[in-house]
Structure formats: structure tokens, C-alpha cells
Figure (spheres, rainbow, N blue to C red):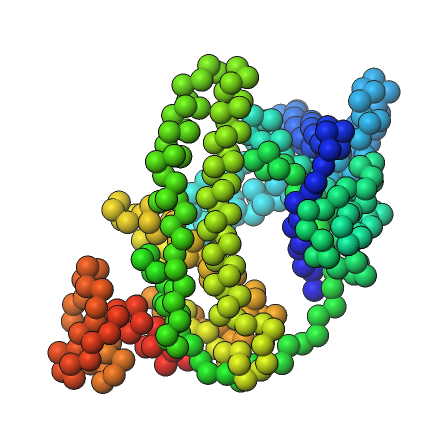
Length: 375
């Protein structure tokens, strides 16, 4: 099984400069390859592959001395990324002709440092210790999180990249995973919402941090200050970094809440009888929900699709089944006590009241109990 581990790096100034050089070399190779492919296409020639382009770059090294300061992996992997970008582009074009793809096809674009420094991928000899990682040409880099990456597993590649002023390394590890024992606990239903992140049929609730809503005023001010700075000035670069850090902070708060909620639901470290046998989720039309002008920002702030993705891959490790119920199932309109179906139920009705049996409960909790029965 291929697993990914992401850790923040603790770099000094010299190491940061070297990482920037490798990111710049990978970006330069990508742009060089894209320009050469376009020239060959216009001239009616055979499109060069990543191997052909790397031979051309090696021939340019004597005239470009800065190439000797970085690892060859930066050029190789940048050109391979370009080949993958074209492969995805042609695949999307084919699907669009068949009517299975909507939107733009995404033709590869030239990379710019203004849109981010990017990163570089390394292969070959990569060694991991409890508190550091050794990469080609970069040497030993300290990790901010210790004893997280497995040391005895086979490492396929390591990618360094910059995000909002911080440097991270993403490590691709090939691990041998035993087949998980199927869980034997009770089936639970999970209803996602805006006011509360998730309501479980067993009574548990997970609060929605509302990361964007709490920071929206400061985010607007920071964005406004950035837009008023003179283009190309140092102050604009500083304002852009402050804006990127604020966006990253909002994303980290949301991501932390999602990981804690999904891990608590799957309960991978608990015994078989304490882990749920199945987790029932609703197949929500998130793209359609985002078209609601009054609720789109609040819905996007929850991260419902990411919640579903995390549940699926964590459940696979823990031996828990994931059941996706049709979005047309009236889980919110059915009384979980007597089974009566209400004809209408407005979004403003947060309390479910059954007119037949008199059952009164929270709307989301009622939907979660109904989902648990649809296995």
C-alpha cells in the first residue's frame, strides 16, 4: 500500500535558499519543456518526451552554471510532471467529446513565481530518522514533528514545497498493510450540517469550527490592504504573505476539525466490537447546494466532500464499511419513531415534530437515526 506523510520542515536560511533554488529549477524545467512541446507542435514535428527534453537540458548545463547547484531530480521530475499534465489534458478532451466531462479541459500553463514558489520532487537515496530527513543535494533537514514517518519502510519519493511562508516535505512510502479485521460494532448514521458539523445516530455531535466565518472580517481587511499596495513593491509582497498566512490558518482550523471528527467516528485503534460495523452517509449534491446564494459560503466553510473522503480512506484501514445513501432518500422527513413521512419540512425547522405519534427531537439527530437503518 502506498501512503503519504506530510511534515513541516525546520530550515535555516541556507537551507531555505537551497530549497528555493530547487523549486525554481523544477519550475524552469517545466516551462522549458512546455515551450519546446509547443514549438514542436507548431512545426509539425514529433513532440519530445521528458527523456528527450532532459537530454537537451543536460546539453545546456555548460552555458548555465547555476544548474550544477541543484539536484538532477528537480529537472527530471519537473519534466515528468509536464508529461502527466498533457496526459490528463488529452484524457479530459476525450471525455468531453463523449459528453462525460464539464468545464474547461485544463491545458498546461506556464508556471510563475507570482502564483507560488512551488516545489521539487526527489527520488533515489532518501533516508529518514526520527527527527530529520536526508535528501539529495539538500542534505539533512530537520523535521518539526518527530517519530511520525516510518523509518523501515521503502520510500518512493519525497517532495518539498512552500506554502504561506512554510516549507513542507511530503513523503511517498510503500508499506505492507495487513488485511483489517471487520468491525462488529453497531451501525451508525452520520448527518452533516452547517450549524453542527456532524450529528451521529448514537447521540454524539461534532461542532463546526466555522473557520471562515470567524475570520471573514480580518480576511477582508487584509485582502483590501493587499490590493491597495503598489504592484511590484516590497510592501505588496509582505501583504501577500500576510494574506496567504491567514488563508492557510483558516484551512488548517477546518482541516483539524475534520480529521478529529472522522478519526473519532472510525475509531481505528479500538477493539472490533467498539468500532462501527458500518458508517452510513448521505450522497449530498454539494455542487448544487453551493448555488444557493444565501448558504453557499456557510456550506463551503464546512468541507463536506473532504469529510466524506476522509471517512472512506480511514474506514478502509479500520475494516469499517461505508454505505452511501441516495440523496433522494427523505431521511429528514421520516419520523425515526413511527416511520411517518412528512410532506414538507422547511430549512428553518430545526426541531422535528411528528404529528402522528408526537415524537419531538432535533432535526439532524432524527435524520442520522434514519440513515443508520438504511444499510
